Length: 298
Image (cartoon, rainbow, N blue to C red):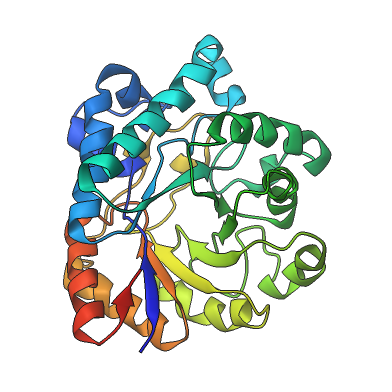
């Protein structure tokens, strides 16, 4: 049996869902400005479900997104709010770690919008500097192409904060990034910029199994946390979309999701959790199933 790190489930999407107002292009950032207590509750509910890591709600806090909404002046304060809410939830719970989330510059699932790595690195470094002393690790999320990975890794690894890299793969072919690049093509990048762990995230759970053996070849701890969307729609790939363009699956309850995650553990994954539309109930079921199978959640 293995020691398994249990990530939380959806943070941003769960925040938007709980708030109950029509979504905006700012996604969960809107809620954090209007009702930050919702953010803390989401983190705390995941901890109580069994998660050992709270992923701070910093995924979308990039200057380019805030500029579009004419709130760039709130850049630092929003990062601080996200970190404060995650750490407050950890203090209330009494245990756990906080991960600083680093989402893609531009938009999710749009490798065509990737910023040149040399230009992206200082943009990430600015965010990471604000996180110093407030996070236990950095989680680079939903990386859809090699250029996105390089820019974020340059900044993160320079910080000396433990860094995990999470890649989003094609929903029909889990061996390829959404850019079309093979996971095999990560090898030269990882020789130069080596994170502490590799994960697959924000893809259909059915796609994960094909990609995990390719992650295993790099000799790093690896794992996965999938989403619960029916598909990434064309509407969501437009400029400044809202999550109203995406639809949650109705066939991926806690038991079904846990079946997928336990299969990933059988493939050697030691880090599992959930992404968009995978909530605390899914994490609670997964925690129970991991323990029942004899694994230790760390």
